[in-house]
Length: 249
Image (cartoon, rainbow, N blue to C red; front, top):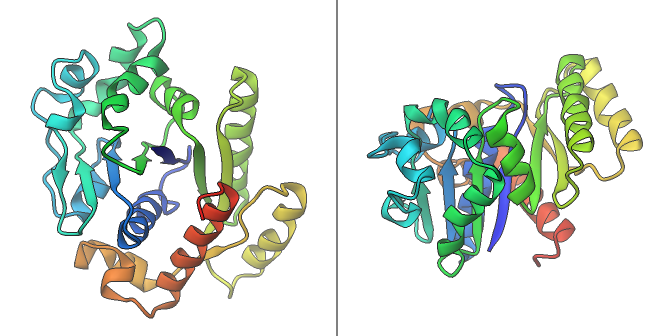
């Protein structure tokens, strides 16, 4: 089981859209996929037409009173399941702070699912916290969507600094550009410049496009309702590049 987290300290950068579309692509290829919507806002749960509600909330999950497999529900897509969000996830930090090794708590929760799924996508809340630090430690890869703007790059360097400061070495950091508007000079300049400074960066760019915004209307993956669109092709290319970087092909 590979654990892939979509994360950014900055909100509104396409994090949830990335998790939903990549999970859908993996499931479409026949992989067994789980999306854990860890953001109390519940956007991924909304896209999958699911009410963001977990009986007992985050406390019950973290204390082992409710195993994750009892909370997982199916989606309308084959091979793709969801662990919904819950508004109580906003308290998950305080619950994990009571644990000596919070990352081990997350792993303990996920371990029973290792025989059930090939991929687990963790759609994370936009914050630096005990939860996000634990996610960094348990994930195989951290997928970081970046809008090519100055402020977005600033948060990217803050993430790098935090990971280095904490000595986290087991996770592959795979940033990529999201919501790219080729009409903007700054976007084009940053898209060209950052990969030279950060050679491990993924080269696929996800465009700023109405099809991605329409995910909220259609409540599904772009590849499902707009298969031939530029956005759908971009997510397919991104998934192929990720699989190549992680030797999943």
